[in-house]
Length: 127
Image 1 (cartoon, rainbow, N blue to C red):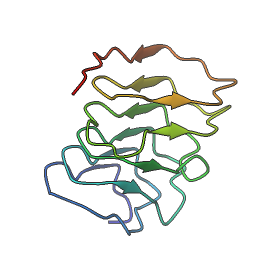
Image 2: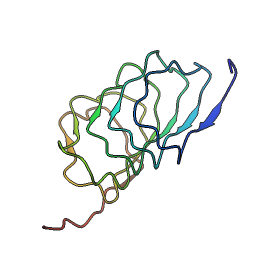
Image 3: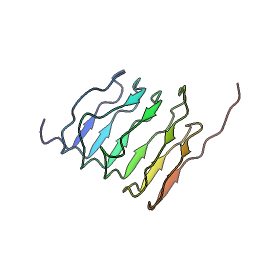
C-alpha cells in the first residue's frame, strides 16, 4: 500500500477516518459516505484531488496536511449542522473548488490563490 496513487473509498458508509494514508497518494475519493469530520493523521504532500462530496461534513482542517491540493470537491453536503468554514487557505495550490448544492460556505481568507474553475452555484431552500 506504500505506492498507491489513487484510492477510491466512495459508497462505503464510512463515518470516521482515523487512518494514515500513503504519502504517494494523488487522488482520494471519499464521496457518498457518512463522514462528518476530516482529520488526516499524516501529511499528504502529493495529494492533488480530494473528493468529499455527498457527506455530512461539519469540519475540515487539512490546510497544513495537504499543501498541494488542486481540486477540492464538496458538492452536495446538505446535512451540515454547522456551516462549513475555511479559516485560512491562503497561498495553497487550489485550482478548482466545487461547492455545488452546498449551503452557506464561508471563505475567510483566500489570498494568493488562482481559481481557474469555481462551481459554487446552489439554490438556497427554506424549510
